[in-house]
Length: 144
Image (tube, rainbow, N blue to C red; front, side, top):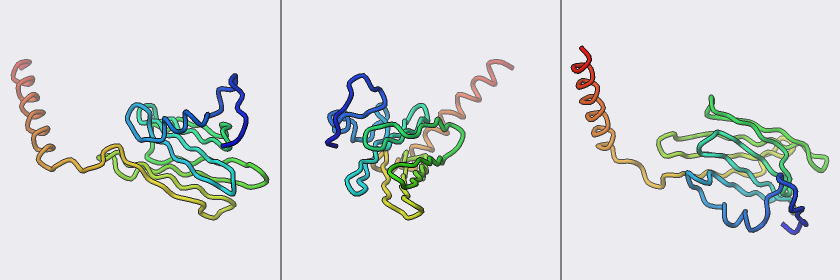
């Protein structure tokens, strides 16, 4: 990322921001970084809003908000090549997002990241269901 950044351009990602945002978290979302023969492809997926953003050499090239589907696709052209970026939520329970980058129809790279690193024990769901059922019965009895 040796490009000179324009401080007034909101469509650029600086190197310091990239280092600070390279972790997966609910607050900062998912960040993925790919290298294509010296060109940087940075991909961000928001964990809250469903916004998916793709950057090519620190310039925003595609952005969509996807809240109704577990997958999304971005297409863009750069340096006489066509790129496709696919987002796929592979596990809602663990918050796992998988990203695949294609260049001219060939897979360039693939990564996945999870917000929750270890699975939730099965008995947690039993506790949640029991508490929910008790609350539901109590509200039904109260309002009838």
